[in-house]
Image (tube, rainbow, N blue to C red; front, side):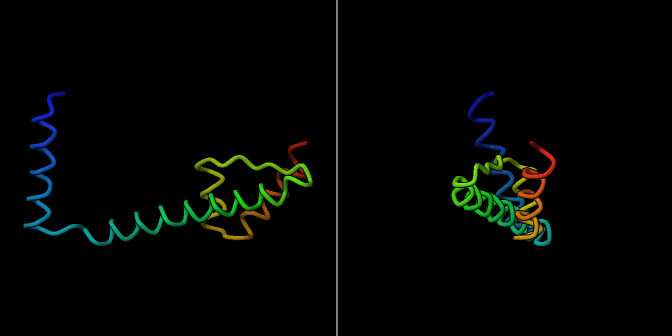
Length: 88
């Protein structure tokens, strides 16, 4: 794709946002979701660091980060229980 077309599309989107404003609810929900995914990834990272002594390893991916981020420490606990009891 031509770089001029991409630049013009970005400028057009910026002009539209200046006139009409961003849809605040969508921006807020998206930012909250992204923050929760990052927090979930950090929870799993620390669980992997401290669980390495016991042979615990939970892969960090979108689904496990979403579970840990939206459910918090209970989600991390559930992932640990799934790893220990269901997955040998």
